[in-house]
Image (cartoon, rainbow, N blue to C red; front, side):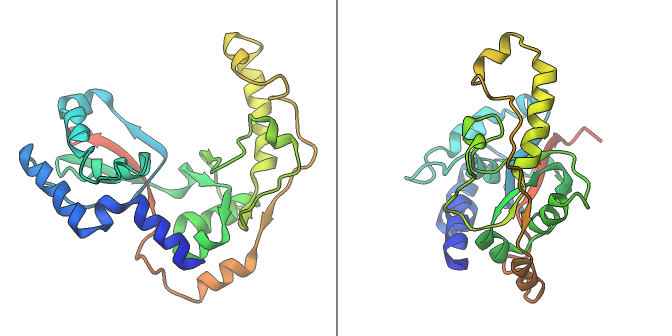
Length: 231
C-alpha cells in the first residue's frame, strides 16, 4: 500500500517531482524574468494570501504559463499550488498542523508519510491537541445527507473522527445561517444532528511510523503566501 500512496503523491506533485517537468517549469519562470525554486510540497486545505500582493506580482500570468507544462495538465489545486509558490520573489510561511487538521486519514497515507500532520491528527481526534481549523478530507462532508448513513468507506482509516466534528459544524452552521438566503443551498436535513458519532485512531499504524524514518524527509505542510513587503 505504501507504494500506491507514494505513486499517488508523485502524481499529485508531478510538476516538481518529475525532473523533466521541473525543468520546463524553471524555463517558464526564466521567460517571465524571475527565479524559481522548488519548495516543500503544500496542501491546499488552508491557504492564506493577500490578493493585492499577488496582483502586484502578476500572479495570473504565472499560473497561465504553467497550464501546458505537462500534457496531463494540472492534477488539481495541489499541483498548481506546489509550483505556483515556487516563485523566488514570494514570501512563503508554513502554518503549523493545528490550522489544517485532517480527521479522515487513510492508513496507507499515515504509513507512507509519518509526517507531523498525520501525527497531529491522531492527537486532535481525541481532543488532546489544539485545533484551529478542521479539514474534512475526501467525503462525505458534514453538510451532506451521506453523513446521516452508516459511515461505510472503501478506505482503511488510521484516523476517523469526522462525525463528532460534523455535529459541531452543523450546530455552528445552523446558528450562523438562521434560515437566511444561504440556507437554501443545503439539503433539508443538512443541520440535523447525527446519532452515530464515531472517533477511531488505529494505534498500530502510528506505532509502525515511530519505528521507521520519514521516507520523504518532510510531510506536506500548510502554506500561507504573502508578499515580501509584509512582515
